[in-house]
Image (cartoon, one colour):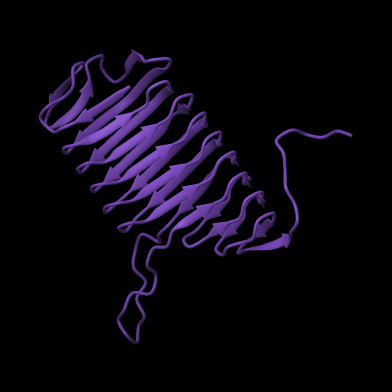
Amino acid sequence: MSEEYNHGSPKSGYHQRSSLFFPTLGSILRRLLRGGYARIARKSIRGEGNVFQAEGATLSGIELDIIGERNRIIVAEGCVLNNVKFRLRGSDHLIEIGKNCRFSRAGSFWLEDHHGEVRIGQNTTMVEVSISLAEPHSKALIGEECMFASDIEIRTSDAHSVIDAASGERINFAEDVTIGNHVWIASHSIILKGVNIGENSVVAAGAVVTSSCPPGSILAGNPARVIKTGITWMRERIIE
């Protein structure tokens, strides 16, 4: 499914109401795709040149809530997205989800301002993950073959300003987040701005990650620290 939205000009199969777009089948749209299936639970798009592309993907309970221009959401072939919410405010954002990625329970993307960028590499799986970008040109880059559990937050910004009392200047600008290939993040973890997690690393349950780590590390605690290096991991349990 590939659609471009220009406000006031809904695509075939949708009708316009108060400048918002709604499915003609009520609150849920069911449509066969080229090799995929879509069930869109809510759709509200205002602005011109917004593109949602998901050919060959399987989508269920998706919410599109977009206000802005020229935003692009690209979901590659073989992806399975369940109950994922896309909320974009501003223009020229990009969300790109690579082949065979999976959101098994739920997920959310919240992008503000302009030129935000989220890229998720192929074969990455997520149970329930929230990704938030605020401030122009912010990026969250996630590698291939990652495994994220539930109740995980990834944030490139504090979303509000912290001011130095003496100078009156802001001291907490946004910083990009980069997560390398083959990283395992356990449940209830938070990845904060400026963090670079090296490939083959593991983030323990409940960790609050505020600083970067080299490849092959285990991070644990609040704030998280490296407790072991020289490791890798695999999805399969080795019994013997």
